[in-house]
Image 1: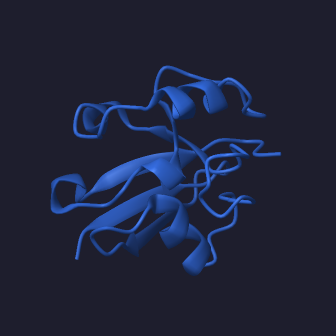
Image 2: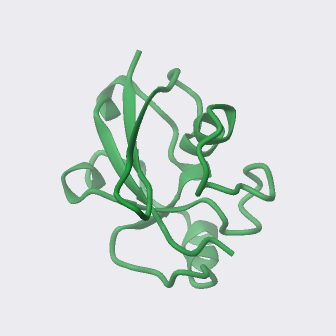
Length: 107
């Protein structure tokens, strides 16, 4: 099963097995990872699952939708070049080893 490393604001690393087809937000909330809030449950209406994707993985992600891009303009931590919403990153074997940093603050 592919793995994702979530890096908390205090630099703590949490490695999680994420089933293919699950979003990073779902995996974080199911595994009790603090820092990924996901208030809207993945409906892309809150931006509380903001992550910063390590640069070597950016090209492997599906392209960002216009709706995700617009929602990232409203994140509490401020948008960066490597910002994504973790509810929009769907796990696949190609993403095995993905590393994301949780944005701080989320709300």
